[in-house]
Length: 156
Image (cartoon, rainbow, N blue to C red; front, side, top):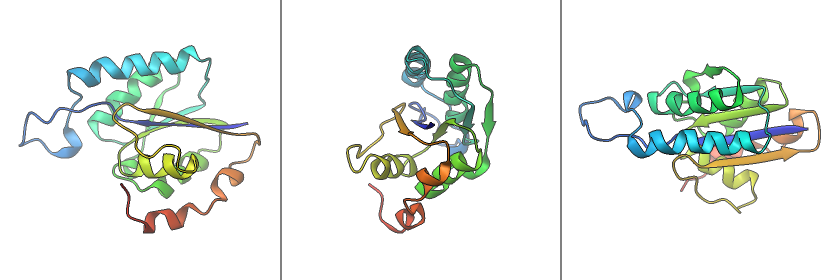
């Protein structure tokens, strides 16, 4: 079984306008929500083989909470910062393990969740978690839905 968990980073702090977007930390709400959501995912019995994260501070901090709750180290990937939906899915598939958590940003996360849920999920708010499963052991099934065409559409 292939399992993909999408996690949009928790709420970030906009208090310092001089701070580069990549370096924005989580705010108080984000620091509260991220461990709570990580704990809720772990409580379901989900076992991850990999946790991938954008290199942005808010994503890495969020991923660290999921890493701790799931007992799997975070693998930071610079390409996930602002990545489109197709790249997010490709990064998970390239890891070639059965259960992957991807922590990244919008609009890519919402676009990917929308496409994988056939429109049932239209927006991933901060610290949202969406789980997708395929009853196969091959990522080719998950990626056969032609994700490259998604990035040509205007995300919400």
